[in-house]
View (cartoon, rainbow, N blue to C red):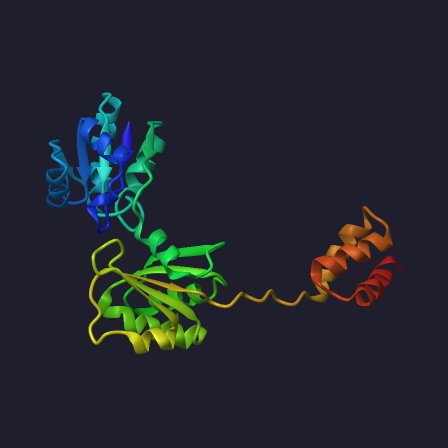
Amino acid sequence: MLYFVPTPIGNLGDMTLRSLEVLKSCDEIWCEDTRQTQKLLNHFSIQKPLTSCHEYTQRQKAPQLIEKLTQGRNIAYVSDAGMPGISDPGAVLAQACIINDLPYTVLPGPSAALTAAVLSGLPLSRFTFFGFLPREGKERRAAICDLCATGHTAIVYESPHRIRSTLQDVLQQAGDIPCALVREVSKVHESCLRGTITQVLAALMEEVKGECVLLFDPPPVSAPAPTEGDLDALLVSLLARMSLKDAVQEAAQTLSLPKKQVYARALELKE
């Protein structure tokens, strides 16, 4: 079995009992950075062989992992902090298990994106996680455009050096919308600035430090007005299987159009 084990993003007390049990009982641990993982293991007095497997080597090392799992070994995978596979290595290893029909499981635990989302106080019935935005160029402009067009809360990881530029870029694209800047999640100096973009910009210290999560709440996306073709296509479909009255009522409700307009068009189509 391959176990994806989340690790603390700040406070070592966030390590779950189940995660510790897996790290203690597995045959070996694969990790993003052996130095960081060794510090974690030392803290909890765990001794296990470590294998480095980071973003740039996970595809190369996946066959070796599959071979070990096929031999019946239990392996834990951890990234430097948080949930493996969420803006961290891990997804490639999960895909390799699926392709080779081998079992893997994911332990629940720390996630900077989800923790920051709740801290932000922004609506969370729907949200989109964008990870790290591109640093510059067309890709960055396109990503910010997508972020502003979601119509619901958007979450991004960002370098402290680019916080101001990202806030200003979103301000230019979407206006002065509600946002939150969450810093140092689960650490001693955890903080959350809430307000509109201009309010958060005004409240920023001269130098932003630490790991940052930015959250935005763009306005809902307005649905495009239905065209005459949309109405005709719907009415033709409805009239083929229900009465004129029922077809008009359903079409008017579906497309948010006046019944009189829909009824007049339905009569034309019937003729």
